[in-house]
Length: 324
Ligand SMILES: Cc1cc2nc3c(=O)[nH]c(=O)nc-3n(C[C@H](O)[C@H](O)[C@H](O)COP(=O)(O)O)c2cc1C
Figure 1 (cartoon, rainbow, N blue to C red):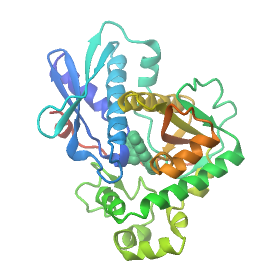
Figure 2: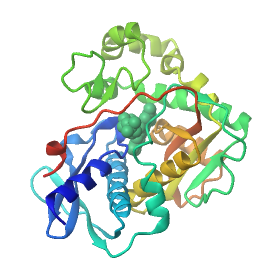
Figure 3: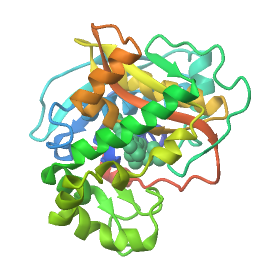
Figure 4: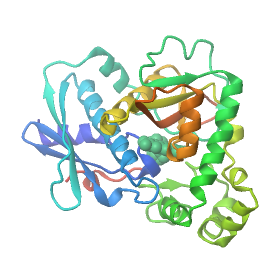
């Protein structure tokens, strides 16, 4: 594989989703092997203390690499690793190109450039959009009463995690609320992708950073501040993703991304709601209500539906930042 081909593969692979758009995955060409590493400076010590989302995000990047190879007619043999390497990096996977691509992989690869996180709400999904979907690792909730309940839980769970000032401060660190921010188009969550109006963006640092949020939270207004319930309720389905409790979250991330691309192939857009899995009380309540087997753990949720408008485009690092 020459350098140009490698860079073309990385360009496609780096479109994978990541928590807070931290983009922790790094790529290296080592002979014929494509290595994926985690840049540990991109972890979220407060919001993701056990590196679950770091690993899920890197898993999505691994799957993105496999699909980029498939788009070029190549298959892939993936070996996962958990070895610390140089200071600040951890090896996640070694990917060896093989002779021929899986047909489904090649089809999914075509969805990679279309998939974006869609936070502005949903239009009704086309009839049959959720039919015949392999649901081994997800529970697909389509009943409107249950979606209503989940929509409420998402805001309650967000309010619980947002009670921590350290969490809010970490979130603010990844928010790009001023267009003049040098990282506005490169990483984190900018005002457009968050679907945040200019006034809210102006006051957000003061509200999130200080005591005002604590006060509003004490007054029980937390769930209203997150304010996603109305948009969540418009989802045609909410997919609850679960994985064996002792399994690899990198593999979970591969499946999560694949399912999101399958949704895209069905004409759907997606919006994760990791708070359902982050807050232990909510995770337990959701797992109980939807009978997630006790040996599996809920690790994310994806609100799904038809797009109700154009999705804001993505922010990404440059190639030289992600090749190590
Ligand atoms: C593990 C994981 C957790 C995520 N959690 C959330 C979430 O709770 N809320 C949200 O709005 N987006 C969430 N996202 C979406 C990311 O913010 C999004 O992928 C990132 O900003 C890149 O944008 P893109 O998906 O449009 O390419 C999550 C993504 C991943 C991979």
